[in-house]
Length: 478
Image (tube, rainbow, N blue to C red):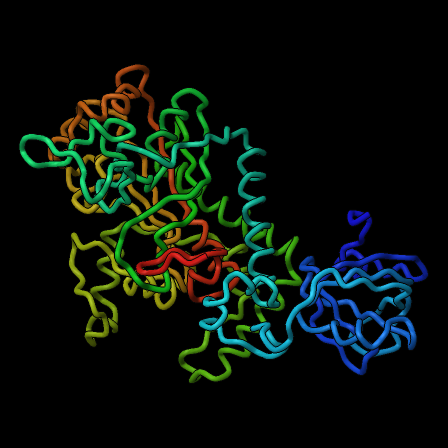
């Protein structure tokens, strides 16, 4: 039976020699017609299979190539060679799937990340991506554990929506109408009443608005699902399809919100360090080797594990947006015209500004609050100064914004006035306004981009490398 196998990670960590075991996996190397390194994805470490003379014939031996899949049974013995404590002395070997050695693209050598993105269907088999996606799994599991332990309800919000949560309009439209002959109204515009849903529909950019409805009944909810932005940003930090974690909490103010977000980020980091240290150490070593080729001033001040420990063990800095602008205006980078984008009160902070605050000025994660209302969404609670809203962003080293959130505007009159200012039709959002009409309460929430969190924890520099199959402008492969 195929399920009677032992994972290689368990064999290497258990080291109980003398037992009969069965392993299955893919060949990494085969040398001297005797030693096979096999890997099943449970760990980056291979287990060595020792083939005694006469166990397999020449025809079978020639089929043991890099990438081929095997089922091997034998005795777990103490290894005589260097590099591993145990190995398997094979008593039977079966080839489950052949791999053409001349055509298999992942030969036992170092491949560039750019090359591996083109082979995204196979890159999971490499050590780098094995480590990344085991960590991604652990972080996803930790998300649910964190909120479950605190009594939150996991709410599945829709992927298809007729509302634009961000008000930015950068959405993917979904339709069943024939694109080459769509029905039109008398004024020449497309008649969406004949579409599948009877109205214009899009892929969601956020589960927040629906999440707020749940918070008005369960008090504390979270969503965790895919979101979509039709933003033509072909950068190392943007994806068209990505995953968002969005908690919404009734009876929370901005301070409660930022405290929960900081606790959440530290929990995720702590979970990965507890359960995935082997993978983190591999990525840490990889990062050091990569940075050795850079000039000294371009290298990180802390290695990956030091950075994670530092974030874990230190409180996040808290400043207002106004204080952030003052710091930037007084900075050597601004005075020497090092910033590409101008700095003045009212701007939407750019990545270079955010990274200066966290990497140069404070050298730790920073929570920025109380942004100008004109650059923020309609649902954010207006502050008494009339100029700012109770918004917050958490900025992380190497990435910039990792969390965005706010206290929500619970006052019906203020919310309706703001929607008028921003030309958001209140009749289409009457379901959302009902939460302010019937038992409104102070409430808050935030969104954490899951891929950016994985990026931070793994130390990778391109967001395409922390999602299995990246969707970006002009790219929707696999």
